[in-house]
Image 1 (spheres, rainbow, N blue to C red):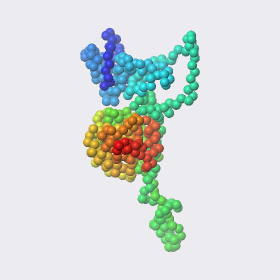
Image 2: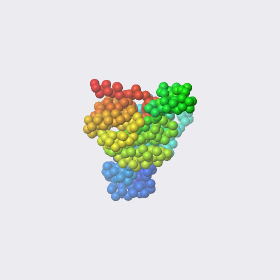
Image 3: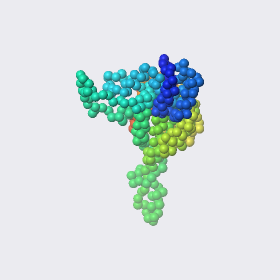
Length: 418
């Protein structure tokens, strides 16, 4: 729950109207709230009273929130609507044109921008013409060198995006591919430039020529494409990142000619869930809705070691053949036994052709492998990279076929050993 500040609730007959407007803001922020819930909320507040801010908060929370991912949005909209001065200052700054260096450069908290946009929906943001006021000097700013919207979104943290920015980021990720180079298999195919001799075809051709050996048929290795196995952490600290990355993986799994033999996707929090068949649906919204219904541990706890053990025991032999590449998407914040976690990571690494770990915490310049889970997992990955923005996923697409790429692993292993 968000931090509670002193709450001034107007003691007048307009409380029901205020609750209605509050519900409308929640609906604009993404919560599925209908008229029935608004009526229930007004009756619940009438029955519970609103003299205590804690009681008022949790009464509305019980009426309007029915999914874990809605808690943060509700908390931010609540603080904005019910008069939190610190957030009102940020909301007012969104109504004025700001220049970097004049306005305080502060990143929005999780869901704060979405909450502010929901409350500001329909508010006129145009200011009066400065030339009409006496004593004012017209100021012209050359914005030709400003960064485009897509360029800014590439480096923006998923957690700091507004609702509109998330929608645009998803459209950008739908165009992003994850190419992979084929693997040379032991099987061969006919080629004049091959280094291997095709004995069977050479002898058959000689028999057709009365036993005279005229040409030697040759073979080159037949290419094959590996599987992509994705293990995605959906615990509370990873929820926003996981949703957007799964949106990206849906486009990868449905892209024709992407090169992957098959994409296998698993989510884990407190348990392991196979969502491969759900991502195969063509409609992305239906696919992610089905995946969310299948995985019942969204925004729950984290048991990385136990979930990796379940994968290694039940699924590794089924999906890890043909030189599979494994993407592990997690922040590594696990409170279980670090020795058991290290053993499961080692087993996973031995089964994979490459094991790449995407960690959103790498967005911080001062990140260090101090957590027990991170320290136990890091030695057993082939590459350790950030996974918090579109730019980080574009970097992954550029290096996923480079066997020598280690990302930030070498630097962090030095810090770990020191």
